[in-house]
Image: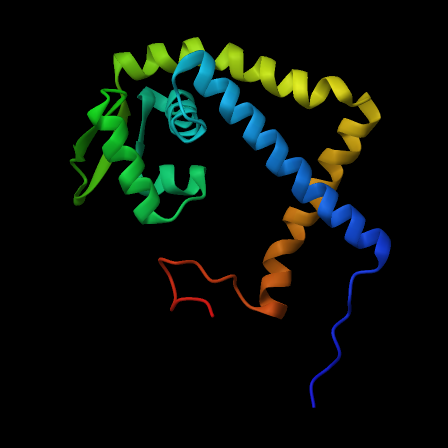
Length: 170
Protein backbone atom coordinates (compact mmCIF):
# COMPACT_ATOMS: atom_id res chain seq x y z
CA UNK A 1 0.00 0.00 0.00
CA UNK A 2 1.37 3.38 -0.97
CA UNK A 3 0.92 6.67 0.79
CA UNK A 4 -1.77 8.90 -0.66
CA UNK A 5 -0.40 11.90 -2.51
CA UNK A 6 -0.18 15.11 -0.53
CA UNK A 7 -1.98 17.23 -3.14
CA UNK A 8 -1.42 20.94 -3.47
CA UNK A 9 -4.24 22.93 -1.98
CA UNK A 10 -6.03 25.50 -4.14
CA UNK A 11 -3.77 28.37 -3.03
CA UNK A 12 -0.60 26.34 -3.64
CA UNK A 13 -1.87 25.29 -7.08
CA UNK A 14 -2.57 28.91 -8.02
CA UNK A 15 0.88 29.98 -6.80
CA UNK A 16 2.69 27.14 -8.60
CA UNK A 17 0.82 27.71 -11.86
CA UNK A 18 1.34 31.47 -11.64
CA UNK A 19 5.07 30.95 -11.05
CA UNK A 20 5.34 28.67 -14.10
CA UNK A 21 3.28 30.99 -16.29
CA UNK A 22 5.33 33.99 -15.16
CA UNK A 23 8.59 32.22 -15.98
CA UNK A 24 7.35 31.08 -19.41
CA UNK A 25 5.93 34.47 -20.35
CA UNK A 26 9.05 36.37 -19.29
CA UNK A 27 11.37 33.94 -21.09
CA UNK A 28 9.25 34.12 -24.25
CA UNK A 29 9.06 37.92 -24.27
CA UNK A 30 12.72 38.54 -23.49
CA UNK A 31 13.85 35.90 -26.00
CA UNK A 32 11.69 37.30 -28.79
CA UNK A 33 12.68 40.92 -28.17
CA UNK A 34 16.38 40.07 -27.83
CA UNK A 35 16.34 38.16 -31.13
CA UNK A 36 14.41 40.95 -32.87
CA UNK A 37 16.72 43.72 -31.64
CA UNK A 38 20.12 42.01 -31.64
CA UNK A 39 19.92 38.84 -33.75
CA UNK A 40 20.97 36.75 -30.74
CA UNK A 41 18.93 33.93 -29.30
CA UNK A 42 18.50 33.88 -25.54
CA UNK A 43 20.71 30.76 -25.47
CA UNK A 44 23.46 32.56 -27.37
CA UNK A 45 23.17 35.53 -25.04
CA UNK A 46 23.45 33.27 -21.99
CA UNK A 47 26.67 31.71 -23.32
CA UNK A 48 28.13 35.05 -24.38
CA UNK A 49 27.29 36.79 -21.11
CA UNK A 50 28.78 33.92 -19.08
CA UNK A 51 31.98 34.15 -21.11
CA UNK A 52 32.08 37.96 -20.89
CA UNK A 53 32.04 37.71 -17.09
CA UNK A 54 34.80 35.07 -16.97
CA UNK A 55 38.49 35.96 -16.65
CA UNK A 56 39.94 36.38 -20.13
CA UNK A 57 36.53 35.68 -21.70
CA UNK A 58 37.16 31.94 -21.48
CA UNK A 59 35.66 29.00 -19.64
CA UNK A 60 36.21 25.29 -19.72
CA UNK A 61 33.27 23.51 -21.28
CA UNK A 62 32.30 21.93 -17.94
CA UNK A 63 32.31 25.39 -16.31
CA UNK A 64 30.09 26.77 -19.03
CA UNK A 65 27.81 23.76 -18.66
CA UNK A 66 27.42 24.51 -14.95
CA UNK A 67 26.83 28.22 -15.62
CA UNK A 68 24.19 27.48 -18.27
CA UNK A 69 22.73 24.49 -16.38
CA UNK A 70 22.39 22.58 -19.64
CA UNK A 71 22.94 18.99 -20.67
CA UNK A 72 26.27 18.27 -22.33
CA UNK A 73 24.69 17.53 -25.72
CA UNK A 74 22.73 20.78 -25.78
CA UNK A 75 25.81 22.82 -24.90
CA UNK A 76 27.94 21.02 -27.50
CA UNK A 77 25.41 21.79 -30.25
CA UNK A 78 25.06 25.39 -29.07
CA UNK A 79 28.83 25.93 -29.09
CA UNK A 80 29.10 24.37 -32.56
CA UNK A 81 26.46 26.79 -33.92
CA UNK A 82 28.08 29.77 -32.23
CA UNK A 83 31.52 28.78 -33.50
CA UNK A 84 30.13 28.67 -37.04
CA UNK A 85 28.79 32.21 -36.52
CA UNK A 86 32.18 33.39 -35.24
CA UNK A 87 30.86 34.32 -31.79
CA UNK A 88 33.06 31.87 -29.87
CA UNK A 89 36.04 29.66 -30.54
CA UNK A 90 37.27 26.42 -29.05
CA UNK A 91 40.82 26.26 -27.78
CA UNK A 92 42.68 23.26 -26.41
CA UNK A 93 43.46 23.13 -22.71
CA UNK A 94 47.20 22.76 -22.01
CA UNK A 95 46.54 21.18 -18.58
CA UNK A 96 44.05 18.59 -19.86
CA UNK A 97 44.49 17.18 -23.37
CA UNK A 98 40.88 15.94 -23.33
CA UNK A 99 39.54 19.31 -22.23
CA UNK A 100 38.87 22.50 -24.12
CA UNK A 101 38.08 26.13 -23.51
CA UNK A 102 35.25 28.07 -25.06
CA UNK A 103 36.57 31.55 -25.78
CA UNK A 104 34.74 34.75 -26.58
CA UNK A 105 35.81 36.11 -29.98
CA UNK A 106 35.91 39.78 -30.88
CA UNK A 107 32.62 39.34 -32.75
CA UNK A 108 31.13 37.63 -29.69
CA UNK A 109 32.33 40.44 -27.45
CA UNK A 110 30.80 43.05 -29.76
CA UNK A 111 27.54 41.11 -29.89
CA UNK A 112 27.19 40.71 -26.13
CA UNK A 113 28.19 44.29 -25.32
CA UNK A 114 25.61 45.54 -27.83
CA UNK A 115 22.93 43.13 -26.55
CA UNK A 116 23.46 43.50 -22.78
CA UNK A 117 21.91 46.97 -22.41
CA UNK A 118 18.88 45.84 -24.42
CA UNK A 119 18.48 42.65 -22.38
CA UNK A 120 18.71 44.57 -19.11
CA UNK A 121 16.11 47.03 -20.40
CA UNK A 122 13.77 44.14 -21.24
CA UNK A 123 14.20 42.51 -17.83
CA UNK A 124 13.65 45.82 -16.11
CA UNK A 125 10.60 46.69 -18.28
CA UNK A 126 8.78 43.36 -18.00
CA UNK A 127 9.84 42.35 -14.51
CA UNK A 128 11.43 44.79 -12.08
CA UNK A 129 9.37 47.84 -13.07
CA UNK A 130 6.27 45.92 -11.94
CA UNK A 131 7.66 45.22 -8.45
CA UNK A 132 8.01 47.28 -5.31
CA UNK A 133 11.38 47.10 -3.51
CA UNK A 134 9.92 44.89 -0.75
CA UNK A 135 8.64 42.46 -3.40
CA UNK A 136 12.13 42.21 -4.89
CA UNK A 137 13.46 41.46 -1.39
CA UNK A 138 10.75 38.83 -0.86
CA UNK A 139 11.50 37.23 -4.23
CA UNK A 140 15.19 37.08 -3.41
CA UNK A 141 14.47 35.51 -0.03
CA UNK A 142 12.11 32.94 -1.58
CA UNK A 143 14.62 31.99 -4.26
CA UNK A 144 17.47 31.65 -1.75
CA UNK A 145 15.31 29.60 0.63
CA UNK A 146 14.17 27.14 -2.04
CA UNK A 147 17.61 26.85 -3.63
CA UNK A 148 19.27 26.24 -0.26
CA UNK A 149 16.79 23.45 0.49
CA UNK A 150 17.18 21.59 -2.82
CA UNK A 151 20.27 19.52 -1.91
CA UNK A 152 18.62 18.19 1.25
CA UNK A 153 15.31 17.66 -0.56
CA UNK A 154 17.16 15.67 -3.24
CA UNK A 155 18.37 13.27 -0.53
CA UNK A 156 14.79 12.62 0.52
CA UNK A 157 13.19 12.29 -2.90
CA UNK A 158 16.20 11.32 -4.95
CA UNK A 159 18.43 13.32 -7.24
CA UNK A 160 16.55 14.61 -10.30
CA UNK A 161 17.24 12.57 -13.40
CA UNK A 162 19.66 14.30 -15.76
CA UNK A 163 20.01 12.96 -19.33
CA UNK A 164 23.81 12.79 -19.10
CA UNK A 165 23.97 11.09 -15.71
CA UNK A 166 21.33 8.37 -15.50
CA UNK A 167 19.00 6.15 -17.44
CA UNK A 168 16.10 7.85 -19.20
CA UNK A 169 13.36 8.96 -16.85
CA UNK A 170 10.11 7.09 -17.17
